[in-house]
Amino acid sequence: MCWAGLACGHNGQVLSVTEGEAQERAELLADIGYDVFLDLAATPASSQTRVRFRCRRPGADTFAQLDLAATSEVRLNGQLLPPPDGGRVRLAGLAAENVLVADGVIADVGGMDPGLIRFTDPADGASYVLADGFPDQAARLFYCFDQPSLPCAVTLTVRVPPGWQCLGNGQARDGGDGVWRFGTVTGMRPYLFTVCAGPYQQVWASGGHGVSVRAWRRPALRQWDEALGRFAETAARALRHYERALGTPCPYPGYDIVFVPELTGLAGSAPGLMFVSETLLARMADPDDEFVTVVCAHEVAHLWFGSLVTMRWWDDLWLDEALATYLRPCRLHPASDAHGVCVTTWVRTGDVLAVNPVVPV
Ligand SMILES: [Zn+2]
Image 1: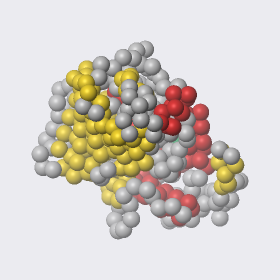
Image 2: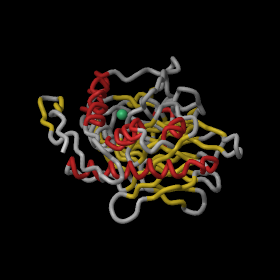
Image 3: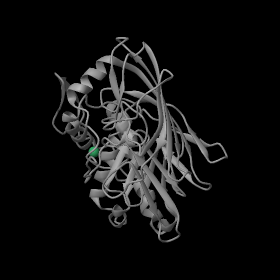
């Protein structure tokens, strides 16, 4: 994921995970699976987390991150644990197979600080929610081991008010009772966790076979539908381009593009989801604005670099960004169908991917 223009910071009470701590946890833990329930219909919002994980050295200690506004209880293998301190819960005497459960209230925040952000549309009074774990805010939403080197499976359930859509990292269905159940997404990291919810309306959808690409916006933006559709079509073309150029199918069955109110960055991409600032709308109206095309293609590339594969530690985040920019197609005009290819090959040298020079065709 990238968050162009993002500035964020801790609230001063939560300890950051160091590289050394992350390395220790990565050597200790394996097969992590999260079942997360978000209740966005409640006020305040709340979450319930059930984490299953394996420990390679039974008896060892570690910690998990949890930074909810209020925590009801945390249990490890049925045993009640002390409440979080500094955003951490100490897990002592791990078993080979472990189950951790926690629930509590999520803090609603705003401004430049991600986590759970609410927006009220002045045009119609409708509310929208963005739940976003990037870059280190996932513990504000649910209990987790949040670091790049601990991939996990996430199975999400969300309750939303009547009439809302719920879009996230996987494919979901409304059970008819306002409860959306998402399919399990593997290869996730907690910081990639993203949910966009609200009375969004669909404005574009790809047809035919392959990855389902859809675009969503709030009702007050309907005058921009032509530009939004053009943007979504560009994303779909970019996706097909990367599948051909990389020889690797898109790792996710769907890709939803959501124009999010009051987004703090320009755009972001997570598994199965792109979220875009409404501040780009004015430039989208110009079909020849190359900057919009570059942003779109860059975000789609993050489905492979930053989602499917990524760095072990944050020092190498630049590599996801460099590859997402460098691999973008030279042209994405509708008539070209993305036949221009900027980069054709790359080689692995040690821990760093080195990219060959641009090769237009
Ligand atoms: Zn990026």
